[in-house]
Length: 488
Image (cartoon, rainbow, N blue to C red; front, side):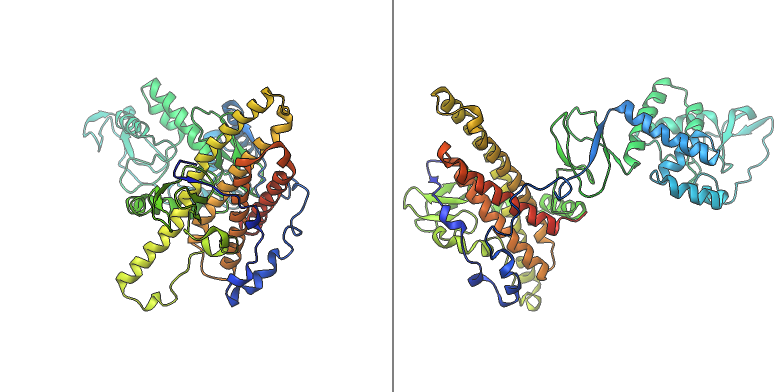
């Protein structure tokens, strides 16, 4: 914490009664955690019980090429088609082998038309003579200078070559269509490679085509980590969390962005787009400093904990809602829940716009606060490592004795990460009983995370049992929220 602020002990603030601060329609959820931590499983969850467990394997490029070739060979063997056609069908239909075999065996001609490989009606061009005119370059050339796709549209080889060069340089490979206007027949790989005159562009096409093959495969995704060549192969669809062992990047298999549970991929895209659009407004209103609610001195937060004490007037308050910390233990549900105006539908357009901005800023500020706290927790981890080294040097325990502090710091980071993404989730939720339950669990987790953050910053070797108990409570709160609201 900075010279302008410091945190204050809040061990006793985590045990509180929520019932006085819940509406009548929320009373159904009052008993959800009535037994304090008795409802939390003491043992660590098994892999199959972990809501974030995702079975996958990391493959090298050569392994992926072999895997894709096996699928192509399998389809060639079953349907008696050439490899180029098999590859096109797999790519067009997202590698659904059973679907392709069923449709192809039922009606091959119709299926190829639906796949944009052959035309419904072939174009009848004029018979080629000794010399013909290309409709693109308008040159008269011998008949052996012309070629066409299954659609029947004829162009000279040089125009095909130039067309393919432009497409490849623009990064297009698998979706290249016929040159003819409004003709959507796809170009086969063998036809394209025969037409290309530059070997370096053939190599570029091969590399780009491989990228497209992986990107269209539902079970494969490139690791987005910097300079990482791994490809992730999913083995199930229970969750989407991938932790690359090579580059240590944690990302969502579904969209390739940072892992964002419990928020789904479509929602997080909407949220990030909105944050980008409204970033200047949010940054202007949600500043990095706040005034003490009692003496109004300017305070800067540079620690992860939200429990702040003003060094000037010794006032303890919550960084997020500026409420009195002494009563905050019973108000966490109110702090993390946005209170909508029930009559906003009857207000003017301007009033509704202000209310919409107010709601967005409420969630954005809390989302950003946890993002900033995550960065500050990295400093805490560095301080813990230094502290452990000092303790070991003076023979006050061994590295093993102090390992629990590092484990606690890692868990705190995991919990804050989950909390950060609960706010986009809550922002887009409809106001129903399910949202009330979500906000209640969110507040429970928020309170336990703040207690954990506080205890980590002040832990000594004699506090090990208390800190490990707090770690267990925080992790079980996180697991409970994800089990109830993480959607696959």
